[in-house]
Amino acid sequence: MLQEKSSAVADKGVTLAQSSGLPEHATEPSHLGLPATPRIPDNSDIDQNIENIKVVLHEKEMWKKFHETGTEMIITKAGRRMFPSYKVKVTGMNPKTKYILLIDIVPADDHRYKFCDNKWMVAGKAEPAMPGRLYVHPDSPAAGAHWMRQLVSFQKLKLTNNHLDPFGHIILNSMHKYQPRLHIVKADENNAFGSKNTAYCTHVFHETTFISVTSYQNHKITQLKIENNPFAKGFRGSDEGDLRVSRLQGKDYPVISKNMVRQRFLTSHTHLAGKFSAGVLGDHRQVHPHYQYESGVPLGSTDSQETFSNPFPASREPSLLYHCFKHRDNSRHLELGCKRPYLDTTPSAVPEERYFRSPSSHEPPLLSHPYCGEALGSREACMYGGMDREAGPGGMAGTEDLPPPSLNCNVWASMPPYPRYGMQTVEAIPYQPFSAHYTSMAAAPSVMPHHSPSMQRPQPAPSSSSSSSSSTPSGLGSRDREAHPPLYHRKPGSPLRPHRDFPACRDQSPMPPRDPVYHLPILATFPIVYSQC
DNA sequence: TCTGGCACCTT
DNA sequence: GAAGGTGCCAG
Image 1 (tube, rainbow, N blue to C red):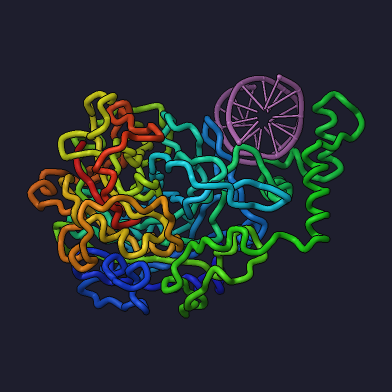
Image 2 (image 1 turned 60 degrees about the vertical axis):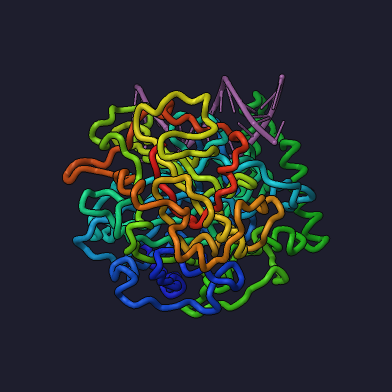
């Protein structure tokens, strides 16, 4: 469908190779462990198909509009869709190869925000990240031809602020900034991912960054939503809209809400004053310079000093980041403890959507702990959430309140969505409580730039980045890894189904018990550590 | 800041 | 016509 030339060009990102199985950036001593310049991998390191995949964000212009204003996404207890919807056009796939497409939404930084004086301002330290969850596209796994045939829409993805959400929606904290990420995973022979040789790419469009809210803060965003979202058509027309509100209130005359008055006043006032103060959020770069490309050319070191005209100054056009690599080392393949194949799961209340626990939420100071994912069962839904607690091969440490997992409950560690600068990645090395480890994603490094104090936590045994790269990321032995099946499994020819039974892994408590395990650093942004819990 | 109910709208 | 997605608003 919509193919934007500019976007297509812009979408040229950098492909990073990592022969050791650990992302290059994760072991680089330099800034965030990122190499000075992206290294083009040889085909022995990177799966050709994965490497060639191009992703274009659909309705990029609309996203830009929102982004320039400061995108806000409503989150509700019941779950709210994103608007604009996350839709992409994918090309470059091997038509016959099966892929799994999924999205996770990771914190863009570790701040909490507030909308003050008609602009977003940092209001403090971020709340502990919600259990990370992944939304797997319902069509997954599907052949490349299928994905490339038409737009891939993630419009059914829903966001919630309910920490105990039973529907598998992606859980977020209100007033926090997030970055959606698209992961394209090459399905293995079992139509799953997580096993050895798993190859995948992560694509990040930073114009999709948003701040989660329970009610819109910026009137401009409200108007953009109303103007562009068909479901909000009833609110279209400024005057009519006001009149409609009046009617809703049983009045026949226009009534302007206080908020609207305030917003409009502030907007006007702010305009006269000079618009948003640049840099309000600008000190939180979401993308690492080295992974930021424009028109196929590295943008270079963009920095926080850059002047931004929008609330999300970190963005740059075009903003696509992606990282691809293939796990050649068994010690790094995705291996999850799937006690039951998807087909064994029974339908659940989770309808049509697939959510998984996401490995990559920033969760200071717990961000480095592994995530435990259980599958939600339903014909199409499958969710994995990040465990906010320690999880060992045989169970989830610190989850004494949890019943024994009756189904699948996987653990994985992830890399924080924003830069951890060297030591962050190094921290993980010493840790060895997991049975499987899967590190990846260059996307992580791209998504965030500053190092937050909150992210600094006691290091079990500071080690060099090289050591981390040379050894199993989490220090897991292959012995344990091999004991676990793929995270995402689907029998050939059968619909991909998630495991059911969240209760088995009710790890949604926002504040997991403090445990040494939490010192485990997250080495990658995408499924990294998997083990049964 | 957040929630639930509402009317209006699309699908 | 039903189901479900919207923003608005009182509380």
